[in-house]
Image (cartoon, rainbow, N blue to C red; front, side):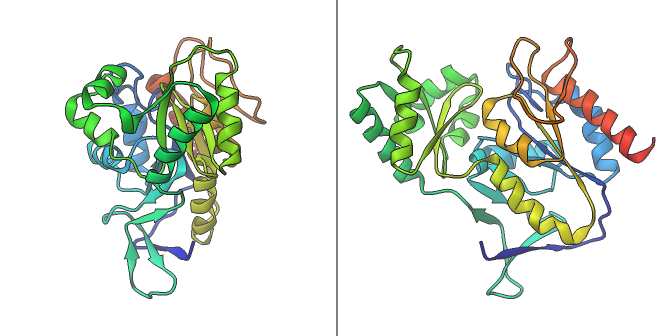
Length: 283
């Protein structure tokens, strides 16, 4: 993709944490991350990157990163793009323009194409599908529990179209997936919505970043998630962690760590990350 990372200051962390947001670092109902605050503070003290990797938009994640005081890169819209805040220790430099830093790398395809494709898929399959681009702010608020400002940020999409299936046909999802595949697209279930996007995912974005982090030292990559769209990320890392509620089946991934039966979401995130820090840093 014609870009490399430059390190703007000394950095010697042994861990890099890639994490989903909704249902993982954020509570699925309140969207709070306070239960994970002790582990987040430990990561900040030890200069351990916490790289957000979500289906959320860049507008949503920029705000969350500021609230969490995170200056590391973050991956948006199920791997569709990678953003580099100006204050980040890692700056992304364009290969053919020496000295020019990029604030964003695009991996996915255009949002307009996705919206058109979703309408075509609905017409070809006869299945009722309602995408974000067809929803009013009030509908998004009702479906997500977001306030109006956050709902507007959620609608500022570039690479990923969330949608709902309005029919109850047992094979509706399979029909949609097959039709999308014929268009060179794919469908991934998330926490609340299905997502239509190109041939990219959270795992491919992790691999892109990992390849460019290698010159900076020997690191162990942690991936933390709770949904099907997190599986590519969990398969791409060294230490995959599943923090979904115990009744939700875990994916079959080698070496997968599971949170305890009494915790999930940010509470489990906190416990797992503190445990990994103690183990890796001999605290």
